[in-house]
Amino acid sequence: MSNILPTATLGRTGLEVTRLGFGAGHRRSMNDDEMEAQLNAVLDSGINFIDTANDYGNSEEMIGRFLRHRRHEYVLATKCGCHPDGHTWTRENLFRGLHESLKRLRVDSVDIMQLHNPSVAECEQGELVEALQDMRTQGKVRWIGMSTTLPHLPTYLSWDVFDAYQIPYSALERDHENWLTTTAQAGAGTIIRGGVALGKPGVGLGSSDRWQAYEKAGLAELKQQGESDTSFILRYTLSHPDVHSTIVGTTNPRHLAENAQAVLAGPLPPDVYAEAKHRLDRIGLTPA
Image (tube, rainbow, N blue to C red; front, side):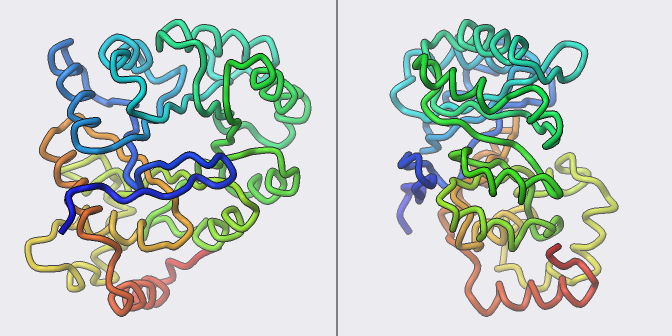
């Protein structure tokens, strides 16, 4: 088995990203030494796609501080629309966030700037697309993206302006399963969040309600010998042919290595993938 993580072309951006990306919204306090070690371990594992946001605590500062010397090794995505009091969907706030993010990240531009989950109405009223396009014209972002969900995704796709979409998806969250194909066919990149359903309760941060479906469907019976439940879910996510990259966050070096090994193992065998879908369908966990 090759130790080089597989890559995919992120839609019309042409960016070659590893199918395993890193979500940098760390959820536990880490000291500087731990953070430096973790971020460098991400790149050392072969991951070349890092996703963060203006409101992910000190995530941007830590990336700028500890990975600036390795900037040529990874694709960098962040998000705007964030505000200390929540989200504010105005041009002024988008540019405020952009300039703050560039300063924190210690860069002159980012590869992908994403809107952070506005509704269609908020996007239209705030003229947010125009703001992103101006950022690109100014050379401060290369590509523009949208982090979104149903029911807004179809409308955004019809506009044909976003180069990449960040969408929640896993075996335990299948609403967007068919929409991923529609998104890819439109020429946009697909970035998955929640691709391991936040990890099994007690090990990760996933909800017990969501993971009950894993038990109810009997998915553990389909695992390879020695494979963890989380690895199986990750491989299910990456078995979807139109998933370009899934961003998985962790502050645990062992979990990072386990995620990389799961991706190196490849997608689920076609018969196992089909059976997993069948079992999920049978318990009512179907695509929207």
